Length: 297
Image (cartoon, rainbow, N blue to C red; front, side, top):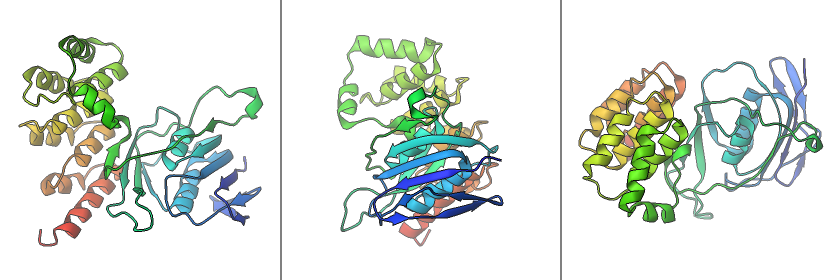
């Protein structure tokens, strides 16, 4: 049975042992410092380590809560550096689909939003071809920035992009509309929907029709993007859209419904009975937040 080796860098020196499923995982060396913010300084090295144990280490060292459905045992070898989200995407692979939430209140010492919860919607460890010089290690690094309480990883759009996309020329909108409806590539359909949803003519019926049609797309990421787009544009049928999405066969679409539920207590309470734990966890967290802010509800 392979033995996992872990190295977490963030300065102060330590040697730890981690117990998992009757096996002990020993650090070769470990550097730690008290973390005042969850979005930087994480360096993770793992060698033939179980994915669940990697999640536990990230939780222990950052204070972030990770939520994932039960998954088959997977062993990962990787070297990942950067912000917590980037380390997760490095371990899981670029195809990983994440929803994340930042803490409601900022620290008086540090105004940077603090990452609090991450929901893993897909968790196939990275399958990149490994260069020989890395000795079977995957190397990643980057940073994370956000000020929204709950985000879908696939939806991040900068303020500059929003301004540019809100005033697309007619021919650009036509190209995006064609991609959203006709592209055989689901990623292109998803991206086109994301951009069309930002166009500021909220009553544009053609965009509404495209988003509504996409609710029936065969690809769940496209369906989730359609749900998000209709809610973003405050569609008059958005409540029905969210309720329908809550019964989708794909957990990502159901999570999109819950993350966009606002203060719809009925929808959130219905989501507490979802078959997937990560949907239930997100619904429970949002209900708790509503009750804290409005104790009389």
